Amino acid sequence: MWRRVLAVATALVLAASVGVTATPSSAEAAGPSWYKTKGSRVVNATTGNNVTLRATSWFGMETDTCAPHGLWSISLDQGMAQIAGMGFNTVRLPFANECLTRTSANSVSRDLNPKLATASPLKIMDAVIATARKYNMRVILDRHRPGTDAQSELWYTKKYSEKRWISDWQMLAKRYKKEPTVIGVDLHNEPRGPACWGCGVASRDWRAAATRAGNAIHQVNPKLLIIVEGVQYGPDGSATWWGGNLRGVAKKPVILKVKNRVVYSPHEYPSSISDQPWFHTRDYPNNLRSVWERNWGFIATKGIAPVFVGEFGTKLQTRSDKQWLAKLVGYLKDRHISWAYWSFNPNSGDTGGLLKDDWYTRDKAKLAALKPILTPKKVPYPAAPAPTPAPLPPQPSPQPSQPGTSPPPAVGQSSSASSNGVSATLTVSSAWPGKYQIALALTASSGVKVRSWTASWASPGATGADSAWGMTCRVTSPGKASARVSCSGAEWGVANLSQGARVEVGAILNAPKPPAKPTLSFSVGR
Image 1 (cartoon, rainbow, N blue to C red):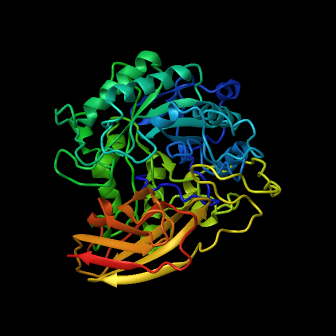
Image 2: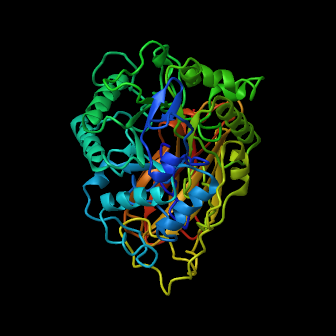
Image 3: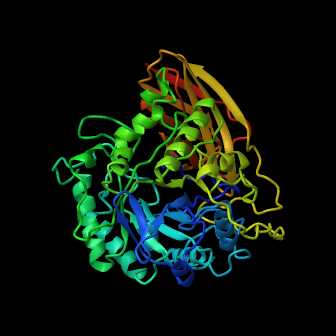
């Protein structure tokens, strides 16, 4: 996701995004085979059998930790056993290019993951892939961000060039050239904004960039699936969720030199994540199938190529979200479409995860909703480890309390305010040494159109914002007792707040501790 979801860094679960095959063929039992495409299906390149990818995203390697989140509370083996046991056959592994050159990760428990605590991010990626193979699962590598600080609209930034983007992909293709557990590469997460499809402008044409990258990767390993997400605005002017618009494929598909390797990957979210006009029509939710068919489903229906819905998720708290998920699950099942659920981790700020905040308990409601397209397996349920004698020492990025320690103060404290027909509730959702995370829920009254908004609160000792989604944040009087955080709505955090809609934005702040009783000041410009 946009991340929109930077990790809620308490004892929440990391997101792995992949699916698991129900019963491996004899060829698979002897060792995994590469995959290719045939019409609308992904197939085993050795046996020709149809394959449906059932994935979940285990995120974290795209954040400052440079490691899957949750390895402070569970072992890598325990996480993979959970994913396989739930019925997934694939893990979508988000990463940032920045992490590929780092020599170490952080927030990995030495007690639970002794071999990973001092390993480089690339070595941790090796371990993730090896552990997935142990549980007969596959891995899709997802370039989620260039740097660990934020996602990018385009596939390149001033700091991370297209050349770097392609060379890093070629490096990974070479590294796993003999490892068919890694079946595919998701080239760039959620192209949006100026990104266009087939417009011919080299600096913005995502279709052309995906073609260049796909061909370059295939020079190293021609067996990899090349997963191409959509854009935000289609050639016909239609707007969807980031990466969710693939209408341009109808006239301008991605054509690579190596045939039968392109998979298209939209992202889909409900109204609680990204409000859209189709959530407010009289025929909702029965209109959803036609919406999906227009935006990306036609690719599979017409046999152009397989579709892999690379992200979808929800906290499953509203009636509208429950209707949306039920319709999407039915649509995926009817068409045998591959998919990846966001996320495995519980610390996705806007969707939550498949695990509860303890990193062990499964979210039964979500798994029940996914049951029609899941194939649970009998995998030994990982036992919770004994509490460690003391928490890990403070580290430069999210390090939640270890099992058995006291929860940080002020978590759960909330404050509300309203302005110009918009109500806001600020909640301190988690905290760990030197940082805390807030969630800000905004609800606009019917008929209200919001131009801008600002929220602020006192945060003694705060020095700055580590990250923010749906808004931008700054700290005045940093490091002092009078320090104050001020955040203003940005991108979807403003654009989606109208006509009775609700959005949830958030941020991670650097501070010695969260404010004991935050008092929210809130103003709206209309």
